[in-house]
Each structure stands twice: as C-alpha cells, then as structure tokens.
Length: 594
Image (cartoon, rainbow, N blue to C red; front, side, top):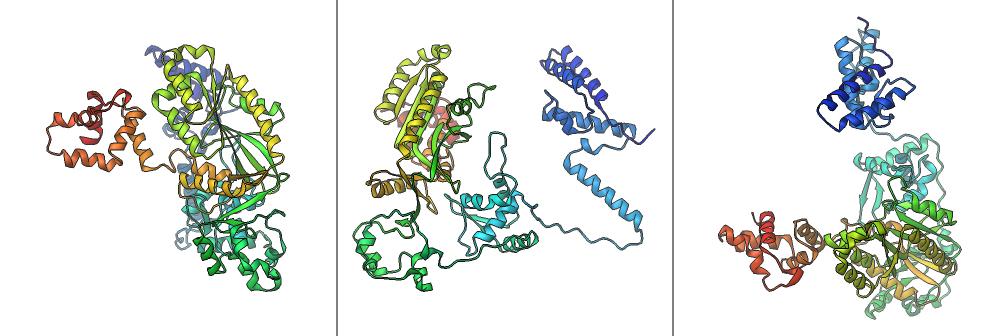
C-alpha cells in the first residue's frame, strides 16, 4: 500500500457527513438539517480540501466540526498506513512532527557528530510587529525611566508597526495586544491603575537596544533648552493663586540661561515656603508653565486643534444582519462616526486631536433603550444601575433615549406603572434628559442633529484635557473633574474633560467597583432578590464578611429552621418591595449560611 496520502480528502468527508446525516435523521435529531446544508456547501466547493483551514472556510462548518473531521482524516491515514498530512494536525503536533523530521535528517547527514546541545530559545519580536513597536517606543521616548501610558506608546510606536494600535470594525486585534506577551516575557512591567504606566525591564532595555541597532533606527537628539524656548499652553495663560502669591514672577529670570533654571521648571515645588503658604490658605497650586493644577497635569487644545467624532457602542445594532446600521446612517449625514466597545453608555462624543490623534471624551452621553429592553432592565435592576453609572461618569449632559417600537409594546402593558414611574424619576431625581421615539430611524435623526449642535458649540471652545498619572476610583475621577471645572470653566469658551482612555478604564462595570456595589450585585444573583431588597440587606450587613459572621458566629447554634427564617425576622419592619419573604430568606441561607 502506498505511504502517500491523497491530496484531496473531499470525497471521504462527503461520505462521513452523509453517514452522519442519515444517522441523525433516524434519531430524529435537528442536526440532520445542518449536515445537509454542510453537504451542499462542500459539494459546491471548487478547490480541494487539504487542511483544516480550508474546512473552516466552508459555510456551515464550525470550528468543532472542522476539528472532528480533521481527526477522522488522521485516523483514516493511520489505518491505511499513509503519512499523516500536516495541514490536518493541530499546531503543537505539526511542530513536533516537523522537529522530528529535522532531527532525523541531521542524524542521517552526520551520524558521527556529537550529541546536540539543548535548544535555548529566547523571545525576539518580529520587525514592525506590535511588540517591536512598543519596545522601540519605550526605549527611545522613556530614557529617564518615568514610564509611558498606553496612549503615549501608541502615538510614538505607530511609525514602527505595520499594524494599527486601535481595533476597528474589521479587526478585533491590534498592535497593542502584544503588550501581554512582553509582560509575560518580563521585558515590560506595569504599575498604577488609571492610567497604567509601562516601563522596560533591564532585559527589555538590552533587547530594545539590539533591535534599534539591528534595524538602524536613529535616536532623536536631546534638546535641553527646548522647555525654556517653547510655549506650554499654545499662548493661553491662566491666573492662579500660586502665581499671584509667588514673588518669583516679578523677577527677570532667563529660563534658558542655566541648567538649574530648566530643572526648576520641571519642579514646580521649588520654593517650599511659598508652597506651604498656598496650601495653608486652602487653595490649590497651579503651575501654568508646566500645565499642572493641584498635582494633575493637563493640556490645552485650542478650538482649531481638534475635531468632534461620535462613538457608538459596538453592541448597538438594528438586527444581526445590520450590525453597522448607526455608522452607515450617520456617515450618510456627513458625520465622522466610529464603533467602539464603550464602558459606559451607548453613544458618546470625543474630541480627536488633529496632530497627535489623542482623544478626549466630551461631556455628552446617551443610553438607548427599546421599550421591551426597558421593561427587562426595570425587572432585573439594570435600569437603576445604568442611571447610577451615567451619573458617576461626570458628564454634564446625559440623555436617555427610549424607542416605543409598536411590535413589542404589548410586553410593556403589564408593567406600565413601573415604566411611567421609572421615566418620571429619570427626568426629575436623576436629572437625565429623556426623549421618546417611535423607532430607530427617529433615534438616528436625533443623534445626527445632536452631533451637529455639539460641533457648532465646540467650534468656539478650547478644551482643558486632564492627564492624571493615577486615578484611585470613580469618585476620584469625578472629584478631579469638578475641581478643574471650578478653576477653568469660570472663563468663557473653556471646557474640562478627561482623556477617552481614562473614561474607558474608570467607567468599566467591574474594574472599579466598591465593596458595596459588588456585594449588592452578589445578592441580586439570588433568585427573587431585587435591587431594593439587596440594598436593604447591604445597609444592615455592609460587607459579605458581616453577613457570614451573622450566620456562622452570632447564630451558629440556632436550630436549622430558625436559621432559614433569620432574614424574615431581621427585616420584619420593612414594607412593600423591601420586605423579605420566607422563600427568599431560605435561599439567602442556602447561599450564605449553609
């Protein structure tokens, strides 16, 4: 029998799927329909099927089916004594076989050669790959080891990579994804939370130096006097209590005359007496030369330096077949639109710097709901959570858009009172602007109109963009924004905002949750425990530990039936939706007390 396997396994695969389809039909399985669709597609395929990749490209053949068929091909080859085709093996097995062949060839060529040394593999990123660009950018732009943010690395590393540092509608992966490999290989390490700061390790610096030399990348020359000779805020100056109280401004000093003066520019706290006076007076320090306010760096973007772009969440679709409906409709209205996975809200607007490409989130946020989705979110508590997250975003203009689609209105009639109450609370207590539309087309028209208004408003506005080195939590994120607004927005035509990257990191649902919020979500996973009930329980037991101690220490020796009814007794004074019943009390005991 020949040791060579056939080049095309199409006929074998057709036979196997036909047999599976007959078997599924006999058993009355719905898989028979899928098998028949697969057969039709495979028969229409003009080319040969010679590997797993060509199998996956056929319609109706999923990943699991392709792996199953590949295993059958390998079993067929083994049974007939054929050489197993590499294309149908998984990557690990294929690599193992390839290395085995190399070893056999080397032994045949030089049988008397001494035993080979063990292979020592070290990671070297491919030229113009994402990892290559990240390492070169860190090596060239962070000589002093102060660290760089993701945004800075993306900006400086883009010229060294063939792949973009941002994802798009057509690609889910970007050059930035290589950072995980670099951290795993201990070439890069990360500190901080928001924004995270990235540094090269000693091994990373050594490898980056070799990469730079290998591809002949020139280093940008250091210019120590650049700071003294350049404008820090594009000609815009702000008064501050620190500047007014500092007698140093009344002296004539040549900033570029000495290295010491350049250092003093980098260190705004050069006069401890003056700083202590300012702090004792209760005001915040402001260094307009270096653009630092109360220890937080910022940038000034003049009205001509940025453009307004609307961002739509990638989960906002019209139908499975029309996933890019919003983008197409907004682009038809001559508006710049992009699709992103937003951490808060469904639509927001960003300012994109024309020269650097950096993005700052503007103070506008929309949450879109169909009436049936609104019903579900009221029932499961998401409605209240989403409103709270919109409030925590620090946006001054929040919109709640409700689409009253006629075909799903019947579902809303059952809880119409709850919907009316929720809408009224949104408009009054939450201070969120609510609009009702009859369909998705009206929503799109409103978004297009609102984008036009925002662009007109920002045609005359300069932006104060916060660039904090570290943000502790969502409250800290908001406090900084409020502090900057009180300082800068007292002047006309100025608006304070965070970087879009800071907004994404801090507004995530789980990354910055407090213990209180996480505990409430944990309680709501118990069937029958609504948001109101969870809040009541959390007020009595502030942390999960307190609830566990209540069951396992305070009532450790109580009878089983008594333990199951502890929640009923504990909250017997509550009324309405906040009252805990016997069934729910038993379920809480099963989770936390058993």
